[in-house]
Amino acid sequence: MRLSAGVTDGLPGLIVDRFGPLVVAVDYAGSAGSTGSTGSTGSAGSTGSTGSTGSTGSTGKTADGLPAGALLHLIRSAFPEHHVVAKSRSSTDGTNKFMTAHEPAAAAGPASPLTATERGLKFEIGIDPAHDFGIYLDAAKARLFVREAARGQRVLNLFSYTGAFGVAAAAGGAAEVTNVDPNRDYLAWSLRNAALNGVKMRVLPDTAQDHLAKHLRRLARNPEQASYDLVIVDPPAFGVGRGNERVLRLLWPDLFASLRTMTPQKLVLMSNDKAFRSRQDFGELVQAQLGDLYRFDRLGTHFTPDDLAADRPRLPWTPGVEDPYYVEPVVLAGTVIGAGPRYRRG
Image 1 (cartoon, helix red, strand yellow):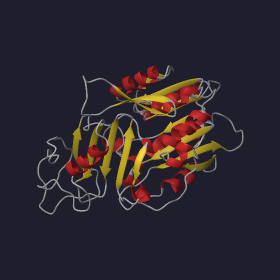
Image 2 (cartoon, one colour; image 1 turned 120 degrees about the horizontal axis):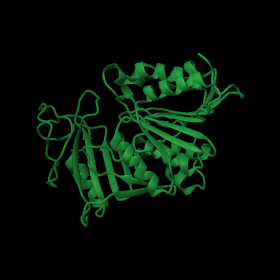
Image 3 (cartoon, rainbow, N blue to C red; image 1 turned 45 degrees about the horizontal axis):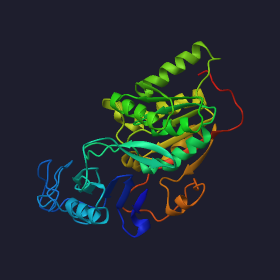
Image 4 (tube, rainbow, N blue to C red; image 1 turned 90 degrees about the vertical axis):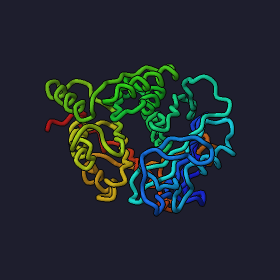
């Protein structure tokens, strides 16, 4: 659950999430001190924990927010029995370079996989601050949408990461779930998440672009072959692959073209790339490319306290005060207009 939602809670730029036994605090308002940059490893502060990504001023402090070590100490005082990771932005140009501090739970035993629960589903959580933690709370409402929409559907989860969308779809009664990601470690993690929930799903080590190209060639040879009913596209902020493949503004047109040809009944599209969205409004781009085929609704991101207290959380996005430091991803859910053909020849 999200414990601090930045400006919404009167703390601009401060996002604090709890993943079961792990608490992660990120101060997006921080910036490097005026003393200049040093190496890539810095002190976490008085706690003695170390570890960092990116560069930081020689003091390790942030100009507008808290030093990572001080943030760690603050969160640790509130959650003494949890693993805690604290990050504070150390760059002055708005890029994602962070000073990181971390500390295991006081009573931590032998290293073993940790799990967190979201609306009855279990997910393995990583605690290495140099890597991702395995699930993003900003996709919580999108996962619920997928879970509710998946019954009897053939689901394709592109850029599948640790398979959280796939697990949600399988738990919702999907007829088939295919997770596509080039990272085999993430695919193995996905299968562990599936096992935690007693569901089955397929994993394919491939890029989204290559998988879609192969799938469309199969459909061209056999138009009667079953296609996907629900497709999830949630690329990482910095893309996947090499060279231009990592540039999302060049990737999205190919994805849109494939989706137009396939015309699945439902889509979930996410963009958390701040640099990409600074060039063009993502919602307007999607509407221009797919708006003649789909009706799109913007979904919310994380579950709010009101959502957690409700039998069924409200999924549509409600505009609020914009955080000056933290940019929420855009999450769009699309439903095909009318009952057109499942496969369109180019």
